[in-house]
Length: 380
Image (tube, rainbow, N blue to C red; front, side):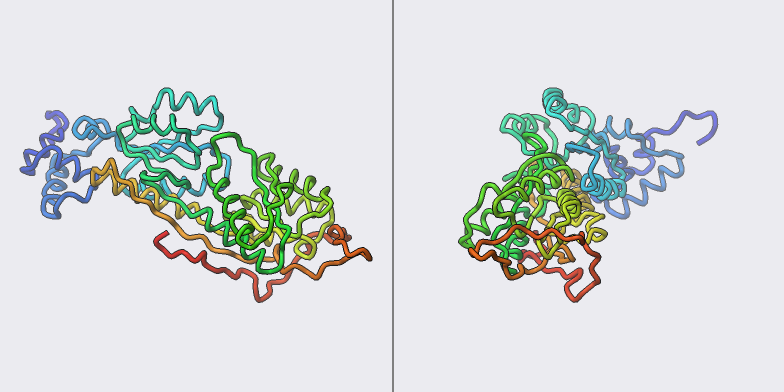
């Protein structure tokens, strides 16, 4: 381009390459729906004219913004941070920007569904870990853009998740198989409409107890607090019971770490007196020697990015594909088979014995780091 000339436009590139303006847009945005020969012609024409596509120019031609929005309940969690990192890496490779809507309270959530800001600012919306009401689902249908659900199941809608019910079943079944019968389940109280996965996890726990002929003691299903605070509150509640649990299954590793810390403060041995099992495989789980039902939020984000890219590139707004990723059980030092009961002369089990030792460091034994599948294949 000579200095006296005005900057080249997309129609200029289209004329030089002998293609349509929309083909130029698809080519320069890296979409796969352009033949190799046409791509070379367009790229050569753009190079000769010193032209590079802008978001605004692309939007005028295609009606698209080049952005994908994601709605999350918090940015202050390891899980969400890891999921967003995986999602961002896949979108970035496709030259798509990521727009994040952090919706941590019910008031902000109501405002989001009232205004639906993503409708003007993105080409697709991902919704992560929300238990939506019927009205909220209807509002999302009004967006007129692809919606992909992440870390939750929405029948008839596109989504990426792990099978939380099956993962919790697998973890609970392990505890039952090694002799535990009084198994507590600890949930957070994150507010109505949040923490969709936790509801499925407690369902999996209840199903295994029912199938094993173990009555569900509702005093062992504890709900309260958030994160590690929930774990600490649960220990105070559970240890005051006439018959405390011999195992605690926490809805997440963050909660399980709170349980471990509270047991240490109470000088209750883990796993000799109480086994502790988490869910997620948090980055701190190995440091705390925590057994867990593992999932990968990074892989979850990557899979969500690939799914939304495929839907956008193929113009499949009504795509209802479900991608289900596997979980696996990782055994570390916080769980063990139930020891022979220590009974009083009357034959009644005693409460867990407090000792001067607390969460002793365990050497890596034959079971450390051992893992097993959930029984569902890679099609999950």
